[in-house]
Image (cartoon, rainbow, N blue to C red; front, side):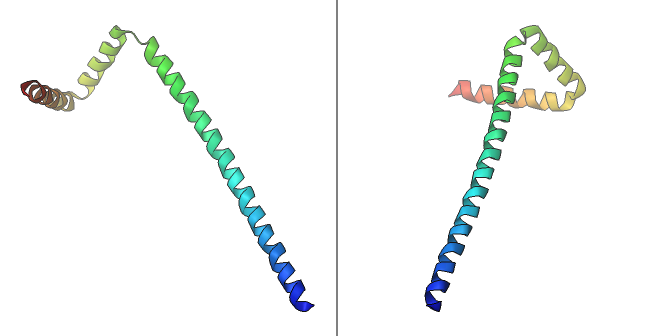
Length: 90
């Protein structure tokens, strides 16, 4: 009789652990879904912002970066030119 009680307690204990693990997984899933939704909204806002940007604004932004980082801009321009040259020669 004592053996049956011990076995049934182990089963109940195992079920409680499984239920706890399931609840924890469910909470993590809800957190992940909320985070995904937030990222999705941010991406949609950025896409809309890019769509609303005119070519003039994009050029102004690029010129601002060149003025702020002239050395890096020169290296980037050189690298782009080199890659375009290599691509066109093939």
